[in-house]
Image (cartoon, rainbow, N blue to C red; front, side):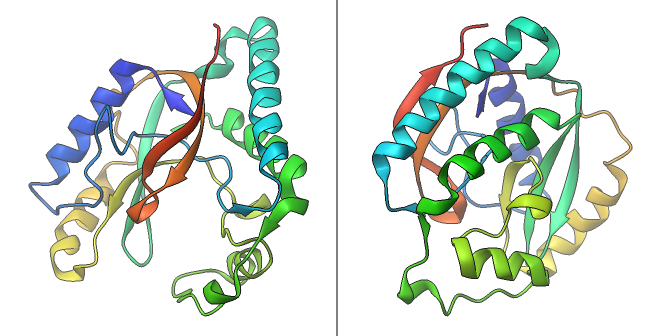
Length: 207
């Protein structure tokens, strides 16, 4: 799910501010490496079903919006840290992401596959249930382990990230002054660090 342009600009600006403390990858932008909320990620054996599902989800959101206009809004974000070096923005309330994830997962879970070459992935920092998710579906954030987020980026340099960790501890109770709406749904090809590399389908949500 892609937020409106002004929200994208604010998230990009926040990452640029963090770069003075600890550079993160990938570098976010309004045209490449779009800030986004991933609902489901993986390899799928039935692309036709994936294509149909994203259109079904767009129709679902538009119907939902007619019933409850605020469903696409988020009022504030907090920063969270996930080992081994990921930094996320988590919206609140995040019901829309949970609903979207469940919609996608139930529609596509039988088509999700894990290549044999990916079975030896380093799962350092995964919880036991996240590891099971990955081994079964090729994606760690499923079901009870899913939580909606915008990825701010990753650092592999633990020394430079210590200062950012200290900064992060202060942020969850602070207003980040980022708000907006989700206005597009995309099916995208994933790039380095889980980035939004290339849109295969890009659908506007009529609101």
